[in-house]
Image 1 (tube, rainbow, N blue to C red):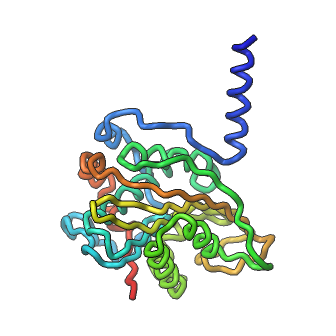
Image 2: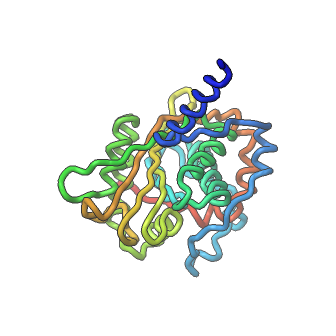
Length: 284
């Protein structure tokens, strides 16, 4: 009788965890190096413009972003930003690691249609390469008034988990993107990698680095359904009934000792995607 009660309780918890959007079905399982080498990555949806065709990691060399400079980036279907405290190698680690997790999840699950499993796998990848990360719990963003702007949903969730410096740098990054044209390669990259005809799945994460070297990331995770496609969906004024966006967020840190073991393998797996799917954003 007790066994039946336990089974029923476990089933109840599983069903309700799914209903709440708490997706945590996988935990770190193997040596990080073996793990990275076992992962397959998806081919990007983004069409690299002709003028960027010759940009390869081999030609550009092993350059890393500059130390102690505020910067924003489009990273495939995500937007990242760094405070002036973050070292160049730490920036490169975050960019490579999060792009690796995106492409791995894209390979295994449909980003827009199977969001639950996509985020579960995305977390699984990050957790196996050095991030201390929890499951995601999503809630629908409730816009004030009759117009919904997705960038406001981003700021709302991040302001609750990010430091003041992180909030400032991601706000500056979003403002810079807002001023770009629909044909700017950074807008096109983000749009193509994160959305389809009427739905999307994207992440936004400002990062900071402590004096002891620990890198923290305020990770905002989002998915949406809309009545139609907009290239600059993040800044479009949606009617309250024409789009629904769901948001989740958490603070996570990168274990640099673990990631150092897989850095070269992650880079090798990404290949030229680390150049073609990452675009910097100058901040004033």
